[in-house]
Image (cartoon, rainbow, N blue to C red; front, top):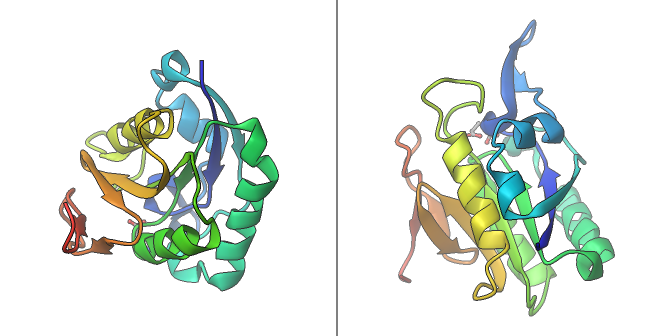
Amino acid sequence: MKKILFIATGGTIASAKTENGLTPAITSEELLNAVPQVKNLCAVDTVQPYSLDSTNMCWKQWIHVAEIIRDNYAKYDGFVIAHGTDTMAYTACALSYLVQQSGKPIVLTGAQKSIYVQDTDARRNLYDAFVAAQDDNLAGVYIVFDGRVILGTRARKTRTKSMNAFSSIDYP
Ligand code: GLU
């Protein structure tokens, strides 16, 4: 069974109603427990460096996430990063250049609705991200979202409400 490191950073996927409104409050373990089928796919360890709205993900966080991948690179077969959708494409692009020539998949995903909402896209996106992260045919940085696997340097958020939030620009 492949070993995957799950890195949770916040975003709508991890949002819950709190006294301060809808805010990223769901832990990496809780996210994983909401998609129990993942346990049949791969062995997962989790870390949670942040619980941020992705509008607050900047270069410091990009470098920190790249360092987490670097420090754990030999121990895992792939990486899944849960991230808010607003700046996910920027983080994917930054990681594509910060992590040079990765032979392993580094997969970002998120959701338009919290994982605890009944008609959420979060469970499917998270499961699909783990499928991609343990796939021997994938290497490098991708966004997996709404059934698509998009190269990290080609992804753009093109829809704010629809489940198919991301497009691949000038690339299949
Ligand atoms: N602005 C929030 C973020 O990017 C909400 C958007 C989302 O996650 O879908 O984290």
